[in-house]
Amino acid sequence: MNNYSLNLQKHFDLFLTDVTQYAPRVIGAIIFLIIGMWLINRFSKIVSKAMEKRDLEISLRTFLRSLINIGLKIVLIVTVAGMIGIGTTSFVTILGAAGLAVGLALQGSLSNFAGGVLILVFKPYKVGDTIEVLGQTGTVKEIQIFNTILLTGDLKTIILPNGAVSNGTIINHTKYGILRSDVHVTIAISNNVTIVKNLLIDEMMKHPEILKNPLPEVIAIRMAENGVTLSIKPYGLAENQSMINAEIIEITKLVFEKNNISLAPAKVV
Image (cartoon, rainbow, N blue to C red):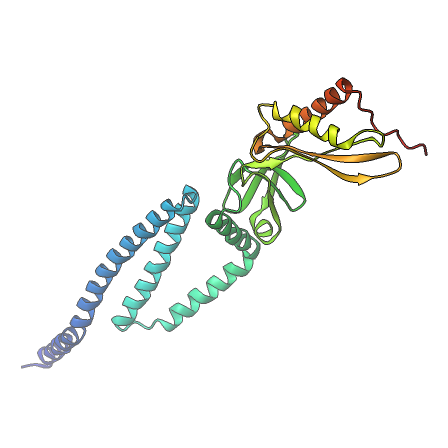
């Protein structure tokens, strides 16, 4: 047998040794990869259904499902590479460095994204609610991944970053469904406060948009030399508050005119 045949036989024997040695690893890694992919897809569907039950926005559901799916598949591939003997230390280091760089570059956006997730999960407000946040008041028109869109009473559009919104104080005017108005009027000291209060309550009870439960209230909150200040507090549906506030003024004027109730004289400066 010549040298060429000997070398060929030697390489063939080495090949068989390598195949015998690595074949179980490769087969095991392939099986692990197939099962891992199936489990990841199954887990993604379960997470997606759980998010649907919580009524999360469809844009957020899609984003989170993709994020979870891709993240788990990257972990799976790195694990499979380690099973067949491929060094993963450098690979993991590169991924970590890239993730850190992206995180630092998108720090503000990631903060807004996290805030959007918290808002959509815990729901301190929803589309259609009237809220007061970051010094702005308006109706929520959209809750996006990074921003919340408000529409003010004078039809201005306000775009608020979700990171700042979620970390700030949120006043939700409509979450409970009803609101109490608070209109102040100062009557002359000569009027009978009890009679005035009863007349106002009787008239408010006739209004179809003012709730009878809880009952409207009229409370004397301040007394001065020239008069007594009354706080008129009717309850109504949140969406009717502006209308109720305006009509309370009209009701008060009509009651005062009909019953000769006088307002407190203006102070002379």
